[in-house]
Structure formats: structure tokens, C-alpha cells
Amino acid sequence: MKHLLSIEELSATAIHSLLGDALRLKATRGHHETPLTGQTWAMIFTKSSTRTRVSFEVGIRELGGFPMFLSKNDIQLGRGEPIQDTARVLGRMVHGAIIRTFAQQDVVDFANISGIPTVNALTDDEHPCQILADLLTVKELLGTWDNKKIAFIGDGFSNMTISWMWAAKRLGFTLYVACPPDYSPPASFLTKLNAPNVIITHDATLAAKDAHVINTDVWLSMGQEDQTEKELAFGPYQVNEALLTNAASGHIVLHCLPAYRGKEITDDVLEAHASTIFQQAENRLHAQKAILVALVLA
Image 1 (cartoon, rainbow, N blue to C red):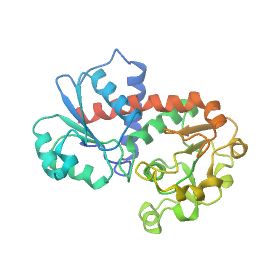
Image 2 (image 1 turned 180 degrees about the horizontal axis):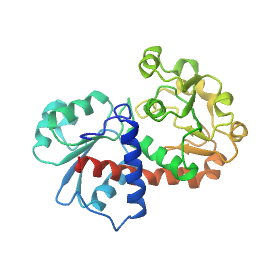
Image 3 (image 1 turned 120 degrees about the vertical axis):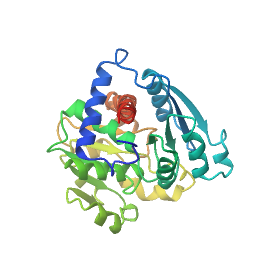
Image 4 (image 1 turned 180 degrees about the vertical axis):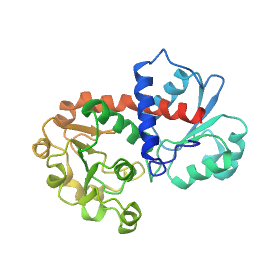
């Protein structure tokens, strides 16, 4: 594996391997190898972050490397320098790059031009690191996703849902996506996905019925905060106690955070499932360390 740019590009074998390494690194934290010793990794963030920045900085240091955080205000990219020029410069100076930005194509172009291992830490199209952490959490708490029903309640075509749909395609579990009609995946995407185990519905109750995993995310993604009219469509897609009465016994609730309590998830549901949700947040560290190890040892 030369880069981690999307779940779409990963095979089932690669996903299983990354999660196996993540479990090992989590179990041996503080006593494992340091393959990044002597390496500097650039963290290029044009979007703000808490969990992504902290987990990658800690992960790089625990693997022996040095993280260099670069916001859009720190580099010429924020003043209009083309991504290809930034890639050519950094490719000569650092050993790898972690990019959190808007356009997926910027991450793809950087990886192709820089010649160094590149990680997509979030774009508008995909959030692969988060989905790997989510799958790790499912594996830890439920043992497997095989023969499980996973429901995603909210925006049907966000970076989270897109990555979840590709994960379902690769791993074969049943995924229900419940979303307002105007926020459904386009037909062109579903044709490309070609996954009969991914079911799109506008009925949140149907999606939640007998689901082993109930997953949600903010209704307004980063950069959409001024689109308050969008929220009006999502009222029936809140994860609350009434919705969860339809879920399978022993179900878990996931939220990638940050959460807007009282919107996509109620305060009482988040608190009732806080141990799972914050285990999920911690798993960003372990999943991302597995990604870095895989890239270094490729």
C-alpha cells in the first residue's frame, strides 16, 4: 500500500490487515516497534480538527517520527500556490504527508506528484481513517460485521456515508442509509457502487429496525455551517430513544464527533452510549498508526 486515499481503493484483504495491525498496536501500546524513527511527516490541514490532529500527532510520535503541522495559514498553499508545486517541494523534504482538506482531487494529485506516502485525513468525498476506526470499534464490541445490519442515519451523500458504502461493498455487510430524499446518493454513484447490500431509504425507522449498529454524523458538514435551511429536512432523522427502540438487542451507537447534541443525536442517547462513542474516538489513534506502519513497510 503506497497511499491511503479512500476506502474505495482498499480491498477487503487490506482492510482486514489494517484492522488486525490496529488491534495489535492498541494491545502493545508503549511496547511496540518505532518504524518512523528519523522521519518527519507533514500534516497539511486546511480544515480545523481536534481528533484527527491529536491522533495523528500522537501516533507519529509513538511510532518514532516527528509530526510537522502546517495549517493553510502556515504555507503558500493557503495563498494560492498550486497543489502540484507544494507537493514537489514537500516530496523532497519530508517522508510522508497527511492531508485534511476539501477536494479529494487535491489529495490524489499530491500523492501522485510528491512521490511520498500520503494519507487522506478527510476530504469532502471520503473519510477513510474514520471508517477504519469505526470498523475497529464494531470488531471489538460485536466481534464481527458479518451477518450484521448497520444503519447510517442522516446525510445520504456525505464523506462519511460514501466511505461507509464502500466499506459495505468491500466487506459485504448489510448497510441501510436513511436520509431525506434531497440528500440521497445520486443514481450515478449507486451505479458505480453496484452493491445490492447497500439499501437507501427515507424511513429512519426502517433503517433502524433490527440494526446492530446505529451510526450518525452532523447534518451540516464542515464548510456548510451557513446552510441552516438544510437542517429543516433532517428532523425525522435524529438518533433518539424512540428510534433506538427499533434496533436489535445489544446494539451500539456510533458518532464520529463532534456532535451537535439535540440535532442529529439527543443528549441522553449520546451519554447513554458515551463509552462506545469515545472508544470509537480513541480508535482513530490505533487505526491511523496501523495505516502509517503499513505505508512505511510497503
